[in-house]
Each structure stands twice: as C-alpha cells, then as structure tokens.
Image (cartoon, rainbow, N blue to C red; front, side):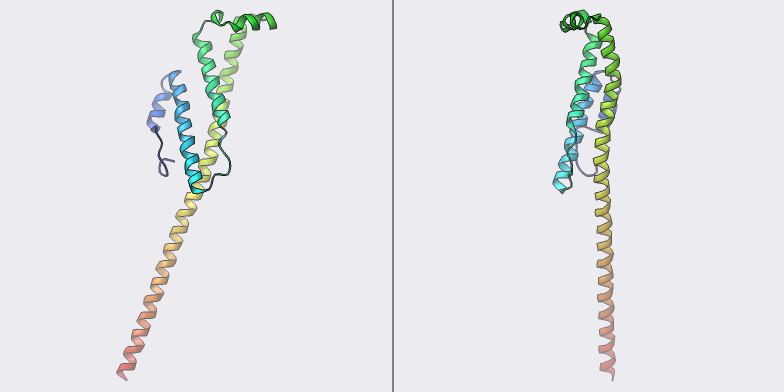
Length: 168
C-alpha cells in the first residue's frame, strides 16, 4: 500500500503502538482507519472500488476495546447501570462484569480479524490490478520495441534496394 499511496502513520509506529498496552490498541484504530481511508481513496481514484470497507465492524472493534478498558480500570460498583442490570436480571454485578470482560476478550479479536480480512481482500485486488498494469506496460514496451525493429529493418531493406539500383 505504501508503494502506491501515502498514509499519515508509519508502519513502524503501528508496531510500536501495539507494544504499549491498552493505549496502543486504541491508537491502532486510528492507524487502521487511516490505512482504510488511503486504500479506498486509491481505489476510487483508479476506478476499481467495487465495495466499501465495512467500517461498522472496525467501529464495533473500537467500541468493544473501549468497553473492555472501562471494565478493566473502573470499579464495577462505580458503574451505575450495574444496579439496574443486577436487579432486572437478578445477577451479581461483579459476575456480570466478569462475563462481559470474558465476552469482550473473545469478541475483540474476532472483530479485528474480520476488519483485517476485509482490508486484505481489497489489498489483494489492488495488488492484482497493479500487477496487471505493470504487465501491460511491459507488453506495450515489447510491442513498441518490435515495431521499432520492424521499421529499422524496412529502412535497411529500402536503403539496400536503393544502393543496388544506383550501382546498376
């Protein structure tokens, strides 16, 4: 992607942010969004955008990550909605939070994989078209060289014919 268009963030920055717990995951959303925007812009510019990137999956990943951060760093007793949930469902609030944490730990990677799969699908399409363009340029160059060789051969033949007629 970086060969064909530019992104605001560097790939090394994305790698480094992944090493930073929690905050890095949040910032990765912005890096991923920037990559998607650049990719779609390139595809639109070339007229090859067939389907839009499913941003709702990427946004769901971001929201789920924020919720997990909230549940990890905030005391469950401080969350007001737990009293409503625990009285309505008749479940202990701490058990409910633990269930949500475990669910989010499973859901977050699934949403990320779904987003990344969609991105890779579009990336493959870009690569396929870019490869075809390079191949077509090489074919056109080979045809042009062959035409030049034919023209040079015809010129040599006509010069040889003219030389032989002048000798006679």
